[in-house]
Amino acid sequence: MSARRVGPLLRAAAGVPAATMLLAGCGIGLQDLPIGGSAGAGAISVTVQLESAIGLVDGAEVLLGQQVVGRVADMEVGRYGADVRVSLAGDLDLAADTAAVVELPTALGTPHIRLLDPGTGGPRLGDGDVIALSATELGPRIESTLAGLGMLLDGGGVGRLETVVAELHTAFDGRAEQMAELTDFTAELLERAHAGREDFDAAVTAAAAVTERAAEGAPLVDRGLDQVPELVAVLAAQQQTLDDLLGATGDLAAAGAQITGAAPDQMSTAVSDAAAVVAALQDFSDRLAAGLDAMNRFMTDFGRAVRGDYLTFVGTLDVPGTIDSLFFGPDGPPAARERGADGRKDPFAVFDDIDELLSGGGGR
Image (cartoon, rainbow, N blue to C red; front, side, top):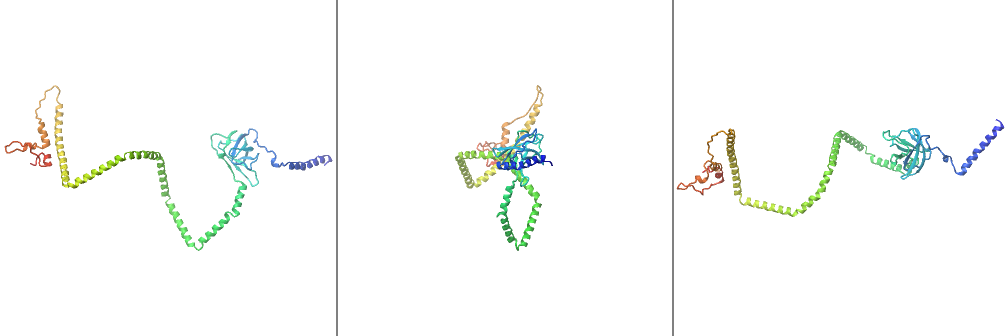
């Protein structure tokens, strides 16, 4: 190597420590050196809302699967946490409802953002869009995990677990037979429960149907409950009237009981007379029906006569006699039957009982 080339190399080698000392004296480290935050030409800018951006740095990678598709451009404090603006490749085809997760690959690594594309159709993620806070998540942090593990090991759950094991040992020691019986009983219970699974499912389905019907009828029940106060108000307004009605009903019942108790024989006679009246009305109805039938046949034949022709009709219509026969029987009214010693009709003749009245005096 010639002396001409050694000189520049020595000067360059001497300049590296000098530059390093200069940077150290100014408080600037390698992490402060600028890193590109753009995804290149045609990149789109998307804002990711995070609850916290602790650990994220400008230039952090944005992954889709295992592929780097962008970088963190800048960050600023948002309304509910941090607004992280990321620069993504312009040829990405992501759904507008894409989610984002902050992940830490290793204990000494740098956090990155992973995009989760649901693969749905509809609107696509474009320049200026925002991935809302509800669609983002912070992954586990190494410091939080180590802190939790230290709490568990340092007087935490391990000591309590030892106590639990000791208590279980005390409870089961010398009770192997009882534990075996308990295990067999538990197995049998589970077997029966499995055998009745269909019935249990049917009961649950029926309960769900009843609940659904009850939910459907809830508006009707609500309307009924709303009308209950009005009904109570109406009953309260009519309280005096209802009291009077109940009092009158009680008086009527008492009077009826007094009447039936005072004259039981008369009540029996009245019932018998009512039966006789019903039988007489039935007989009268039969005879009246026969007479009306004959009258209908006559009117039908009479209507068949030719208008303008001659028709000879010979007949006798005894209206009073017919009425007497209907009401008093074939023997006529009692005044026609009862005569005195001189043979004259007795106008004051009366029937002895209601049976004789209804039968037309046939019993005399």
